[in-house]
Image 1 (tube, one colour):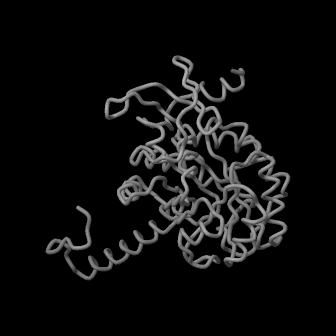
Image 2: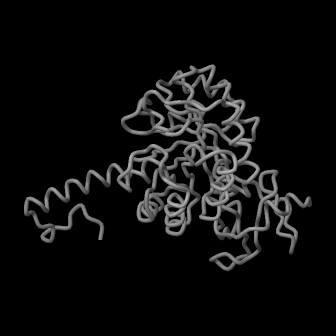
Image 3: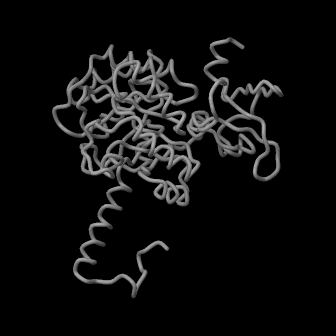
Length: 328
């Protein structure tokens, strides 16, 4: 084992890990059985790559392993169906998502800033994002995909962000190629970073990570067309990105063309009030995508319910006579 691998994989805490009593069961049959487990060395090969593990006993008393959050996310992507990742802007939202049967959740910038009463302009800090990561990871125990905006600075800042997110419990992050102040990907007049500078951020994230799954987001389809978006995606993959997130594609043909031209795992964004038409998860899968997020849906539903609640209280309507529509 090389010294660099040892430093990168083992010299850190297990904050982002969970108990997996039986790896193939935990991945729901998606991951092949571990090929190599050497007692005392904490080395495991999962899907052909080394993974950080710890020997322990699962909740059923059987021998188990502790698998890092990023590796759990990768295992989910080995399943045949698209990975559905709903937004969860709080610990309670993540518990509800888990109860509904989801296997991963998304902590998005628009939902975090919206919850704080702020616009989605990249003004939230790394520490503030980590607050959300910690509460969602602790509450649900699910792998988290986190919105990294533009990386919260340049290459060195990106490296610090990656380590902070991992320590807080994140499994994956996406980093976009806009300039600050960034905008929601579905708004007009976005300013793009130089493609080489954006690729340098991806390379920095890959260098800093321990197990984090790195997704490069490109907002170039609007300003540079499909050719520009594809060229950027390929450059980001060369920099080490694990997957690509093409933002704000406006029709099914664009989604299909991007998937034909970019041979990598792809993430689709099914946001409301955006440029992308409404598609189901199965439709995204048929177009060649392996992941789909609903970034702010839960926050928007909660906000609407709260608006109606406050209006009812103001009108003098008391909720005590009925609990219909309320969670206990």
